[in-house]
Image 1 (cartoon, rainbow, N blue to C red):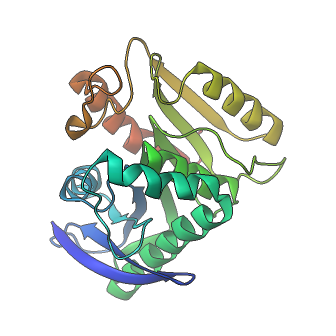
Image 2 (cartoon, rainbow, N blue to C red; image 1 turned 60 degrees about the horizontal axis):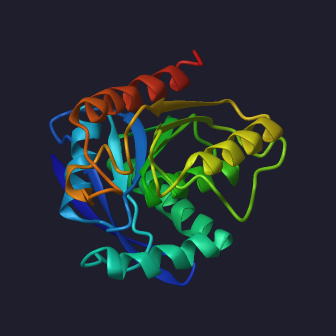
Image 3 (cartoon, one colour; image 1 turned 90 degrees about the vertical axis):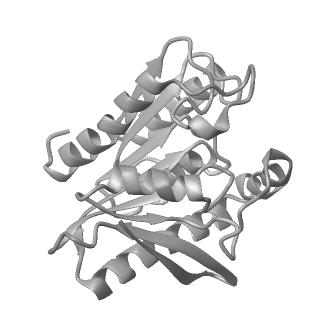
Length: 243
């Protein structure tokens, strides 16, 4: 897989993301923006993007902090992520800039199909791609895995253009059932095309082997395999107008 570090601007913030694609494949492929968890553009996130993209997608790992920053761990990542959670407009500005970078860089290389675009996010990144959908981004599909569901800027009727899929653990202590209920009400009020799959008994970050925290986050390989398949299934159905 090719991994190109890409410098781009998000307003006044200089960012560095990663464009990930199979260089052996010719011709345009669907675009997949990936917003990683709060540890940023790490090696784990790039490997995850490569796994999901495989030979089918051109993926881009978004940099939400600037400079491709990789926090050393949760104590450093928490304040960085929480600052963006509190500033909905800046959060949207940064994730939208990453989408623009994916579009422009794939067009330069003549490998991107701009008629087929999706976004996927994990944990903090799941909240980022939901903000992209709430802002009315021109995407067919947005997939959120054990992500932030609440927002200071709820969608209004007609705002959301993308089909939305949320995959979540029933016992997630970070984003509990109350948040799911608020999100559901928001999506219904906004008239969005959305769906949510709840995995019984699972905690936070169940799709990420590197994110285990006892009592809070726990990797589940079976659920992870299912979710990774569903990312492609949902995006493909959205591209084909079959949702």
